[in-house]
Length: 346
Image (cartoon, rainbow, N blue to C red; front, top):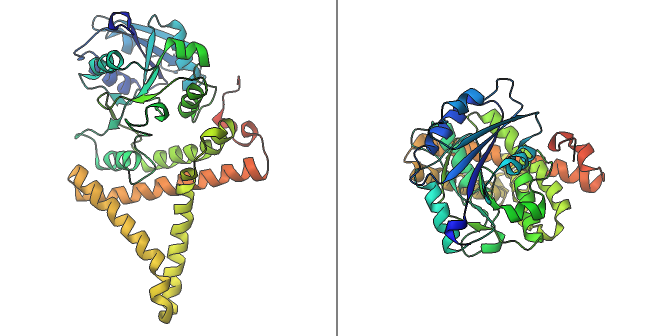
């Protein structure tokens, strides 16, 4: 696409979170390239967000829409219907956008156009230790987080909706996000592939992502991700991978390692063999500590990263197994087994 033809519309579907939205919009006023419109879709907030948007009307080309609560996917679709652009960018309210973000998107799309992209996320130096540890667990190559694919896997990179873009053509062909409350972004990525569209990582289009600020919220989030994966596998069987089982196998392997460790305390003649699983588990956890400590230059974050990684694997792994059992053993309908994962209109 000719760069002159590109018209970017940034769409933010948000429920409450006044402070986060203010911080996000403030960061967007500092863009080196201000050639974009801003679409805020208030997804039924009890305290409407129009007053927040009004503060930026002189700095951003901003439009505010209020609608009844339907979840993020439906609200993003609503935003695309209202937008004037021919290319849509989705950002979450808990992100902060570096000054070169918009320009980097223009650069990527003009150099090598693609109908859908995703960008990476990172933690800011100002974040607390738990936020940095959660970021590590969600983005490190040692865990299930991180970039889905890479530069060499142009067609199979899976964008996430906290930092994602699709063309109007891709939206009109696929219908946008399905009425899923969890897993709606990988679902869209796979439907894009099924319709012949490519996806690509834009490595320089990074956002600062606050993610969950408490371990309880993080545990609930990754549990829901685990539940969503077998649902996605049913919807898109062509893209099922054996690696999806890794968190569950780690969860079960950890239990096995600790059991054999305890048994080895009572059967010392077999201790060397019995403690092999625990030794391997310990080596892995030490790798988490070292890589996190070096990345954030903090022993505390390294220690907390071991905790957040265990929470990630245990909760995701348990959710995955529960979903597998209900969907593939009990043969339950996903919408009946996990009704909170879907919007009622789907």
